[in-house]
Length: 440
Image (cartoon, rainbow, N blue to C red):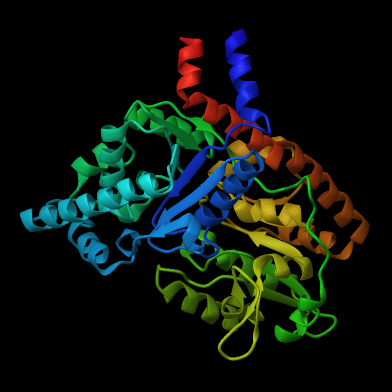
């Protein structure tokens, strides 16, 4: 054991020779949960003297630390064609199989080039072996692991068996092989207990839980001059109160419950603001929400065209704000999701010290709620009691401050960068040869 602790010390000392870590996915760009959470991992690793590099089909990172392979993006035309042949069907053609194999071989070659170009020591696969948005890329990665035995981590945010759209498949053989791979060199990381149990039951592989985190050790900075006109740009009056739905506009977010809440509050000063767009799942749900809000007399504002991953001026000469610019002007955050892999928006609301209305989705109930957060919780539908509780919180500043301070302290204990740092130190130790030589 003495050699084990010596090895741990060597890996965590500031003067440790840096390890080159390569992150791989279909996309590292924008404000999707996978991209944002990966940036947190990279920040913690870089603070520990490691160097991070990026491989994806769409990237926000500079060329000197990244390799953009357009065919690796899930919306690349070739992958769209492949997806049309394999989902919602129970058999595929030989031609479809050939196209998958050709694409997988090409992507595997680019992965080899990525590893060589940046002298990668450890690969981290971000959800690309979990959700089969890009089947050829998953196959390419699995073959790369088998051929090289490179130390690797599969960071799973959610699995294909959790999504209805992947329940009927013509590639069950490929899903079994690559999503995820069972290779003994691959260390699996999940973000909640249910995923850990499902992965063990379905695939027979162990995993560790690393929940999503926020830098609670450093509170958010106060609003600056850039955002002083934000309320005006939203068209708000001085006495208007913002209720923020900080999610994409997709059915599993349960946004109709937020509309019902604002309707039930019965005061025109409450404005419901949705920060994100409909993403890649169509606009039917968005249109339904707009019609529902109109019929309910709710002032619903879609602000996605003015929200981006960085501050900038758009083509029309207007400011683009970040989601973190919007949180400070909100008086309440609604998060009535039907399902979440974890719940980043919940942690963000706590980070910005905002009260929350949340639906008791399974992961919240099992992993987060037992920590002792004080939030307004609905069980699948909104009741008068929950509306009354929200009204009291919005109108009682002293109570509201007590609640948000309590929640911040709990989150800082369980979901801080310090927790992530501890997990990653152990994880890197687990996949180095030194660990196995010392322990076995």
